Image 1 (tube, rainbow over the protein chains, first blue to last red):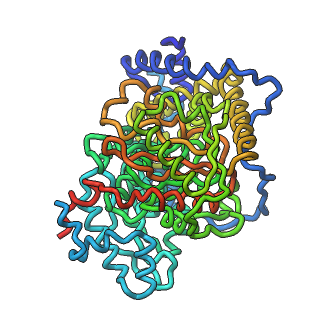
Image 2: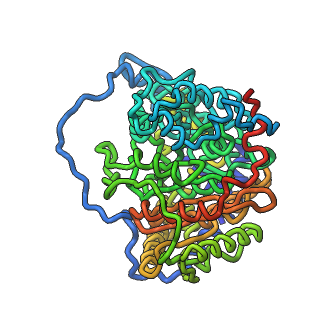
Length: 97
Length: 490
């Protein structure tokens, strides 16, 4: 039901690198789970409103007022790579060579 | 081994107190909270079940005041909750060693009420699992039989309480992650109404379903802990002020209580021993004055399908934040996208990858209506089924889990077989309603859970009914061979 190409497409959307064995296993496991899930397609759901929130609540609003937040150094303490007060990352552009 | 159970042993006497009893003694000045903390700390450090991923060095300083309502009774906290400066890894290698800069609201509230942090408990990675075998830090063992799983995903919390390594614990429930491990470990577990407890600082799995709740030795302890967990939090806009206060349950009868037994969740696929215990409990309930009637939740059999679309879909979005940039693991690469993909490939376990893939697929262009749209409509029908049932019944009752604790490794080969664990527990979070699991007895020496579900914000009535049933069942008096004995406390 889900083939190799679909697995690779979804994996790229999810930013997930999969090994060769993972690709094949994922195709068969996801197909099996989806086979079960698709049984809900048998229900007559015409005119049924999709759930947006389970408890009856109105919008929760608050005043848009600035307040203190965590200090920069505390936020950066767990960062794998800190670069001059920010999060360091590799280049978003692939190297040509 | 069971000699350590002796009442002459001061340490084990402490351990035998329920959390409520211990809190009461501290408040009366008959018990030093530091001594109580140390009694549990020494047991948690000697943990042989892999229930803890971190244990505190000692009681908090300053100690909670003697008038603190929770009496300084230490609390085990599922690793999904952020705790400032303390490892909070959500059972995942991608967060190995992560120490957050802030604490989850429910943990802060409980600490302020006098339940200091004893330790962090092991869990299925990002709360995805029903056996604790998906933890990046190894499986938790069931204290009733160490060759078996404790359930999941709050398996560490459940095992710690069942083995007397913690007086009480908190966990989170998305599709059954409090109630099912409570059932498999022979303790009480409650999933509150959606919004009753703040989700702030709970590492998100499926935001429209996740709720924090207590795992305790008995119903009174669950009520006491829940009392200080609920409430609106300005940091979680889905949290709602609880109407009134959580009351300590005293009820010992069920007169006038109408219990509905849904045909769809109490027959096919449920293990014989579990059904026997369930039916015996129904007879006990009748003896306490309840009326029992069969009922229908016609869409309940589709709850599992809706759940395994909605939860992975939300998870695929929530887990996008684990990308090697701000915290946790990074696997280096020359290019940014490659760094993301490799970091996630290395840091996430197999089940988390499966659910991210499933959720991403269900939300992807061309499939959204067929999966996510349909699932949210099924969810509406499930809520309507419950509403119709509660017009006629006070509570819906089912077995908590279709079976008792199973052997480690016995259900890992087939993901869908593992998902069936949640058959009786997923309909409630999909409808946002509260449900509690209490131990109803043993089947072949293993605990069985009995589940009661009520309408939104019916926690007080639910706790009262559970308390009456618990008293009649008398599970606390049943023999529990490995419950205390294997921990040398002398």
